[in-house]
Image 1 (cartoon, rainbow, N blue to C red):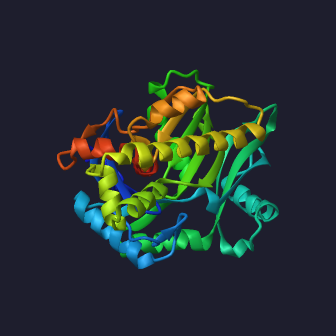
Image 2: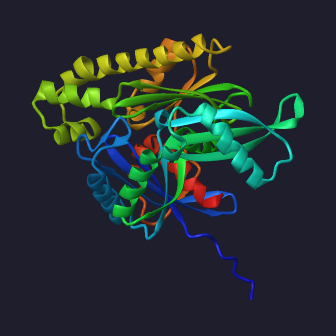
Amino acid sequence: MGLITKSQPPLVGVDISSTAVKLLQLSRTGNRYRVEHYAVEPLPPNAVVEKNIVEVEAVGEAIRRAMARSGSRAKHAAAAVAGSAVITKLIPMPAGLDEEDMESQIELEAVNYIPYPIEEVNLDFEVLGPMPGNAEMMQVLLAASRTENVDTRASALDLGGLTARVMDVEAFAIENAFALLADSLSVARDGVIAMVDVGATMTTLNILRNGRSLYSREQVFGGKQLTDEVMRRYGLSYEEAGLAKRQGGLPESYEIEVLEPFKEALVQQISRLLQFFYAGSEFNRVDHVVLAGGCASIPGLAEMVEEQLGVPTVVANPLAQMTLGPRVQAHALAQDAPALMIACGLALRSFD
């Protein structure tokens, strides 16, 4: 036998944000990826608040609907917990420990780094390689999250008909997806990239260098501010306002009186996040800004960021080089692509 190589069952990447469930399934031939299935399914207001799942049933239902709409038959999922819910630490370890010794050593060490009782925490670690300047020690990345953060996500997936196979961290999922964009940016390998993910209620800055995340910070600001303003000004419901934002049909005054001030405010938030980063690091500039998230596709936003911050700015499309399966509509996908960074990073875990 042995002619047919058994591939692992496909994993669908499921990103649970405050306003939607985003789902993506990829396949790979050689080094080319193909988008097989995808869906973005809105969540009821307040089902997820600042990345914490409040109503597990509502999220489970949305996952079920997204799966049905995407046509995916996958049974296993990769999901992620938000950066604010995760503690990551680089810890030095003696080189040459075997896996088992390392595991017990890390559990002993972890107590010093984690402010919760260890029995309430899910731990994982990854060996990054030798310590710079000391070959006898190696650097180990420790990631820990409270068990409830992991469990609520697993339960929501379960209600949606999926089994959680991988539980990642959003910042690492973004690193994974960023690898697909890196070549399209005209930046030196060790250039400093600011990845700004503008979600509905949170804007997250991830600083990447050499493809690894150096720094991450969240700010409470996002597209919901724009939706709320549209609701207030034009007397629309939450759903109507969300649709109008995406599909148009608002009065002419919208561009100048609502959208422009929102874009200005967003550029200020990005500038503030960068100032925090500069203040706490040895860097005082970034080489490139990459905008992701639902608001990234607002027309003219990238140009405004570039102009006001004086840094080349692009809109993220991690799927730009991928072919599309028969069930995927190119136009819809292009619209949603900047918001699919995390889902894409998670879907790539299929090929680990």
